[in-house]
Length: 326
Image (cartoon, rainbow, N blue to C red):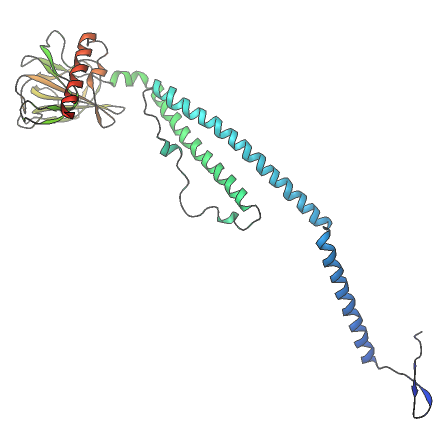
């Protein structure tokens, strides 16, 4: 039972019993409850500043474990990077060299991932920088692996078709040695034109021979261009697409024996030597193009060119380039 309380009455000089209404009691209890709640919250906040709850400790441990795993994964990716770099180097310096393919440019191998910010979902966390860096590293490796996969596909194709490539590559002289009068001009980035009188690139070699001498296709391929007009700079001319990035051109011809679209084999007669176009005497102007760029044809005469002829033509080419610089 609750205690009965009295209050002294100075007028009556007696004690009056104190009575409280239900409302007053509820108010009092409410105040006491609120005070206890505030005290409890205060105790909790003070405790939480110095001590972690079991759940917080569990989450902290999980976060530490996750961060450690990210760091270990980053080290693994660096190890994969080194292995991939070694594979890329062997691909460029060995495999692509053996199969005569151009190395893949670093701008393609190291190309980034374009587009909008694809890492935005990873932003806003305590370890966002770590997660974004790791994701970018992973994307970079995947991109390089994709490029390397395409490179191996290309090399496998070339390895399977090596016999076809060998037959298609320009590999013989377009004029037989027994019909050849002399090697008149070498490949050069600049030489004095005998008719025009100024210096300009000479993208092939000139082989002097009597008019009517047979001209042979230097590799298997398709006739992609025939110029029958003798008044152009090249005069009558034939262009052969050998595939695999190789083309050959035969200019100043007297007669042309092939049509555009026809197939030829190495050693087939495609026409005869003449002096059409900008030519001062009967000869064949012969060019080899690789991947759209003119290259020195003497590097593709595997059996016909003697060592002395090779040295002489190289010296002539260097002399022409020195004259251009002078």
